[in-house]
Length: 89
Image (cartoon, one colour):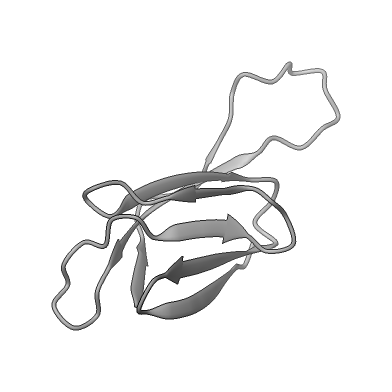
């Protein structure tokens, strides 16, 4: 499985300026098959060690909110196994 992370991570802007909490980061990307570069709909993406996750849409695109760039995304798809990507800050 080939995972393409497109664009840059964007901080959420709906948090009050005075808060001490870190804003979540939105990671967006597209998952394609390495063999033919076709989009893979229905790939499960989760944040390692949590129950937070999402799936790719019909075009292989996804968007997931992570608490920081120091997380690992786990990609799984039936027939392809699993892939892990560490989001280095």
